Length: 158
View 1 (cartoon, rainbow, N blue to C red):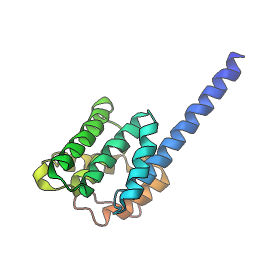
View 2 (cartoon, rainbow, N blue to C red):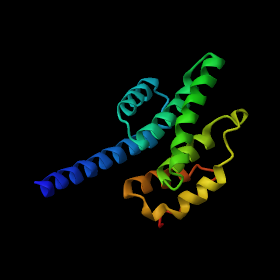
View 3 (tube, helix red, strand yellow):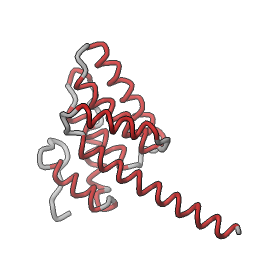
């Protein structure tokens, strides 16, 4: 009975991890969206999950959502909330390349006056060093992203 229960638990954990990676990929793809409806749906979806990758994605999406807010004080508040979520997850697991990918993309694309750009070079190097460990889908997304990135330089043959 314990063996069967252990097998089901292992399968469930594996499935959850696969779901998290699919969610992560969708978040990365949609970080360039200008559709607030799509963004809000993704935020609602990641808010439901209580995994570290979902919390990091939630923070990243909130920072992206701040672009669409009109009132400056609300914009800054939403950005800071998202930053706190993402940075908390990075502090818990600084070796997680997915967290560093999210931070790199946000830092490259947020306004300079927010002063959220101190980890650009470190994150780019970290992602490049861990590129081979990523899934093919994430690699393809990053290769596409790197074509317009000032900090992340990847070759399609990597």
